[in-house]
Amino acid sequence: MPATIKDVAKRAGVSIATVSKMINGGNVLEDNRIAIEQAIEELNYSVNTVARGMKTRRSMTVGVLIPSLADYYGVSVLSSIDRELYARGYSTIICDYDETDPDGARMKLDFLMNKQVDGIIMQPINVQRKDLVRVEAEETPIVFIDVGVEGSGHDSVTIDNEEISYEVTRYLLDNGHKRIGILVGAPGVPTSDDRVAGYTRAILEAGADSDPKLRSMIDISEESGYTGMHDLLSLETEPTAVFTAGHDLTLGALRYLNEAGKRIPEDISFVGFETQAVARIYHPKLTIGLQPIMEIGRTAAEFLFERMSGEYRKNSREIRLKASIELGASVLPV
Image 1: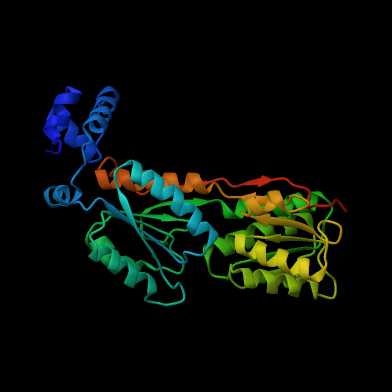
Image 2 (image 1 turned 60 degrees about the vertical axis):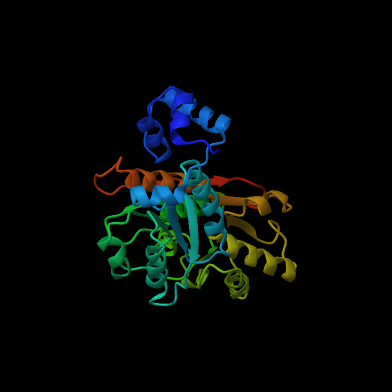
């Protein structure tokens, strides 16, 4: 006969209420938690999530919604989110949506709501307040990553995109570069606009070349990185350094440079973004900007759990984490 919650409580030496509280995501004393976990393992106790859901009106599932499952940022942050939620007894339903479709995000949010998820973590590219009407009407907690939704009043976990772009550009300027190109996502997206703002601030402070043709703003795809790098190197006066402000943009730009026979850093200095694995095997090792992706996912999951469990009911939290520069050998002083 399968073990019951009563058996677990008896083995752990605690009350049934304490066991129930823990397996439903509540906080218990550390000694009790250890005893309960040991009892669960020894008795091979399995929580009946269906029965629990009927009783608690919780599905123990969380929806995770990102624009593209092929995007490096989305895939990487998903791993961290899933790990954190699984440790708390939650499973995830992962969806993507077409950010160019005006109804794309809303339709996928409706899908998740129909699945009766207990909460949602979302990367809201081109998402507006009106897309959140049903989520807010049903009081389902939602946490945004990468960017927020203006005026929505929900928790968000982002990075300081303007600052990392400023620091990268400043690093290139400090190495003597005055004509610096940047490849970034489409205009109107807060992430892209902030990275351009940081780049522009550094350029203007240094009195460097502010030629608008040095800014390529298409989207964050590998093909845009390839095209953008081609366009920069087709200018009458080429840049001496380039910052590719996105993972796939970096890959596309590197592909073009390889095909064009351009050497890094002899022919052009180069700073990428997020491509940590590529940066370490590329010769020479690339200098890159790094987002704290694991921390983003972990913090978002913690925020959502606190909302779902009722541990936090106060005003929205807007956490802006700091990105960093990992130095390589891809920048040559002028």
